[in-house]
Image 1 (tube, one colour):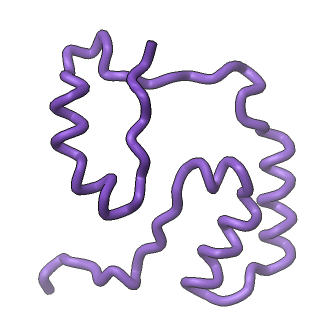
Image 2 (image 1 turned 90 degrees about the vertical axis):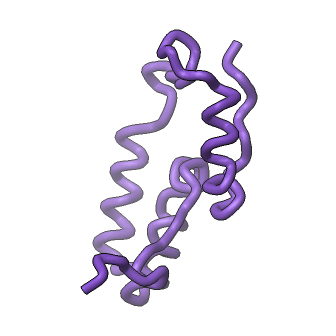
Image 3 (image 1 turned 180 degrees about the vertical axis):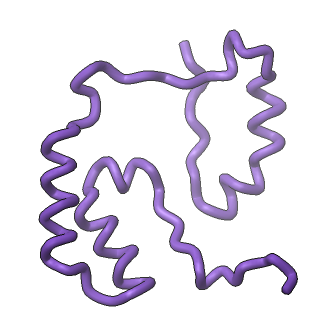
Length: 94
């Protein structure tokens, strides 16, 4: 085979959607791939989200600063990805 998987084999989600509403996001993934989200999986996702709330230990901001990478070059290089998947450009780190 070509090694290329068809688009219908993938489900793309935005990270912020998964963080903001993990149960709804996982339910959408199940609907796309398998059907309704089973109750036990729904409960497990909800429990995990309650046990691991984002930001409890502080937030980490990733940036090109200090890595030797050029932020403008990275924005240009991955513009196709942001456009294809509707990923907003993040503001530069302070």
